[in-house]
Each structure stands twice: as C-alpha cells, then as structure tokens.
Length: 265
Ligand code: PGA
Image (cartoon, rainbow, N blue to C red; front, side, top):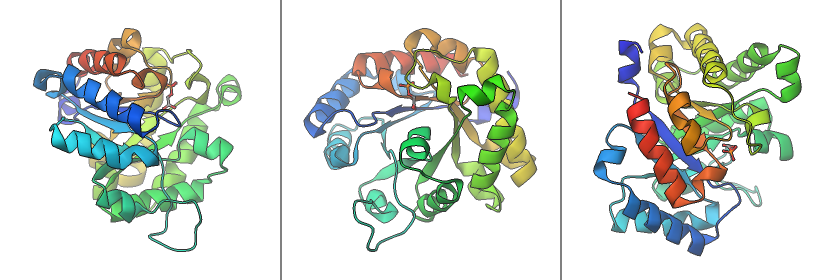
C-alpha cells in the first residue's frame, strides 16, 4: 500500500438499478441510517443511487436524519433542458441535492444504446452542474477471453476523458465493471480487479498527467458482497466499490461498508 493510496478516500456506492419504489427506498435508507455509525463512515464516502422517482423521498430522509450518505443518480441526459421526452436533466438532479451520477453503466450502453460520445457529453454535463460523475468502463466475457480487456478499457476511458482538464479528471470517479461479473455472482479476483484498475489509472496518466492519475478514484463493481469486500478493497488501485444487488438490503450494504473502511486504508 503506497502513501499515495492514503490520499484517495474510498467511495462505496449502492446502485439500486430498477428496484425499490419510493416507499421501499424510504424504508431501506432509514434502515441503513440506523445501522451506520460515525465510525463506519469515518474512513470512506458512501452514496446510494435510487431510481429517479425515489430521489426526492430519499433526499428528505437523508437530510432529516442527518444520515452520512450522499445522494446519487443512476443516469441523466447530456442537455440542460429541451424536448427530450422521458429524459432527466443534470440541473434537475443538482437541485435535488444529488452529488454523484453514474454515467455509462454497461446496462445503459447495452440496453439503451448509449454510445461513447454520449458518455463523454453526459459526464461533462454532470461536471458543469457541480456533481461528480461515476464513469463506468468494462469488458465483456468474450473480450476478456480474447485478451482484449486492456484495449477495451483504454478505448472506453480515452473516449470518455480525452480533452478533459486535469483538475476535472482528478475529481471524478471511474468504475471498473467487468460485464461478466455484473449480477452473475462471478466476481473478479482481487488480482484481476487490481490489474484492470491499475491499467485504467495508467490511461488517466497518459490523458491528464500523473497527478490526476494519483488523485482519481477508481471503483470496482460486479457481484460485490460482504465476503469479497476486504479482498477487493485491499488492492492498491481499488478505491471503492459500485455495488448492485447486494446494496438493496440495508443490512448487507452496511456490512460491505464496515468491511470496506478498514480494508481500504
Ligand atoms: P451487481 O451489479 O453488484 O449486482 O453485480 C454491479 C453494478 O452493475 O454496478
């Protein structure tokens, strides 16, 4: 563990995807608030990313109970307003107190044809409105088998970040999410997660310089559970976790947060 690692504060994010209506989300966040102590969240940042329809409710609970968890969104559009039926604009999220927005999750890329260009435009829109994008990259199983993991990560990270000023690059979050590990129960080994995250950090160094690369936080995502949290968080270049299924249950998410803090030091 290098000294540089200590400067990066880990971020554990719960992505609830299309689960939990606003009543279920209220219950879940209240439950999480009761379980988390100041000591649990002392060493790291935590965010939850409920569906759009729940954001206002969850924000109210977080504020009323002073729960030390940041509000996150799962997606947004790249324009500030306009005739884009069904989309949600970044300033609307900023107004709701959203701090983090997931951009380019593989499910958006795969099921909703989100392109690299849209990912690049959206992350810039999120930054413009003072929020932090969590930009997702990751290879498919076929790409991994063909030995194309690093080329894929380089291509996605470059398309997203090319031309972004150093300070903006340093302040954002990247998430390495191997597609074969998402929702499958198959987690990357600590070694695989480390090698991919270190590679992504190298790409950031090429694009924005060594300082930005040292500062940028890189999460791992894909079948994270309490049992594999310590191994993943023990890796030098893994600065946090993007948790899907396991984050739906407050007790399980709290267990992950408690494991992640000490392991990530
Ligand atoms: P999972 O999802 O934890 O359910 O595998 C991870 C993600 O898609 O962020």
